[in-house]
Length: 267
Image (cartoon, rainbow, N blue to C red; front, side):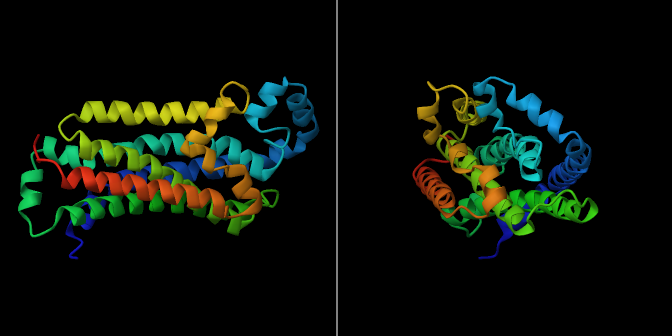
C-alpha cells in the first residue's frame, strides 16, 4: 500500500480536526473546572435531583449525576459529544465516495493503480484516524484536569477506555454513512439526510428509553445502547459492549465494500 488516499484524506481534514479537538478539549477542561464549585453544593444538588420525578431521575442517570466527577463528565460531555461528533463523522463518511463523485474527482482516483477495496479501506482508516485524534485531544485535556483540580478524581485508565468506547460508537455511526455513500453515490443529500435521521433517532430512542417504558425495548437496536459512558468511566473497558460495536463496524464495512465493488461509478 502507498497510503496515498489515506494521507490525502487525512490532510484534507487537518484543520477541522484541530478545530474540533481544541474546542472539545477546552470545553472538557471547563466542565472539569466546575466540579469544585458543584462539590461545595453537593447536598443541595443531590436533594434537588432526588426530588425530581422518577422518569426524570432515570433520564439524567440518578442522583450521582453532577455530584461525582464521573457523573459530571458523563452528563456534560459524553451525553452530547458523541452526538456532535456523530454529525461530523457522517460528513466524512458521506463525502468519502459520493463527495468525490460530486467534485468529479472519482474518475481520477479510479485511474490510479489502486483497487476499489483499498480506496475504500484507506478512506475508512483516515476517518478513524481523524476521530481518534479528536478524542485523544479531549482525553488529554481531561487527564490534565485531574492534575489541575484535586476534586476531579477521575481514573485516567478508565478515561482512556471510555474514549476508546466513544471511538467505536462514532465509527459505527460513520459506517452507516459510508454504506449510504457507497450505495447512493450520486445522491449525497439523501445519504446525509438518512444518516443524520438515523443518528438523531438512535440518540433519542436510547436516552428517552431511560425515562419512557414504551421506548425502552427499542434501546438495544441503537448503537448508543452499547456505550454506557458512565459504566466505562466508573469500571473501565467494557468488553461485551465493545465486541458488539466492533461487530457492527465490521458488518457495515463489509456491506460498504460490497456496495462499492458492485456498482457502476458515476451512476
